[in-house]
Image (cartoon, rainbow, N blue to C red):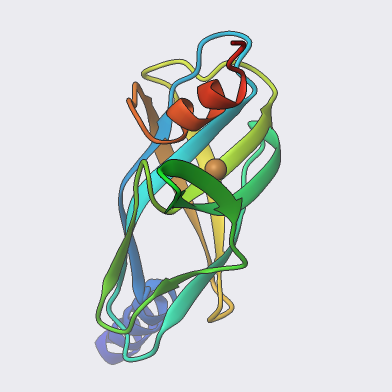
Length: 152
Ligand SMILES: [Cu+2]
């Protein structure tokens, strides 16, 4: 009897054990009227194979895209990427000015202290849910969006 129980417990923990661990997930708070925000986090890959983040989903915005930033001629530009790699036994940090999950067309302002639920889909066929805290975040793409709207 005991043996059977132990076997069942081991099987369950094997199903739920994940090669990926997501830490410090947060989302940029937005003032009313701002249509876009971004989510950031650290993704750790404890497996022996490279895994990539392929897709993110959330119900707070109409569109969710994977983005990165690159400096071109002194201007920080943001563009969509098909995937974000997390190397075997490595980690990738999504942060302002670098990789981020772009939330486009927010359905409501994101208030500090609340949470945004995200579902992340990975190249190993697994998906993971994350609850990201809404925080005030300075820098990053905010700068770029404002530059676009300069009237001189
Ligand atoms: Cu972006």
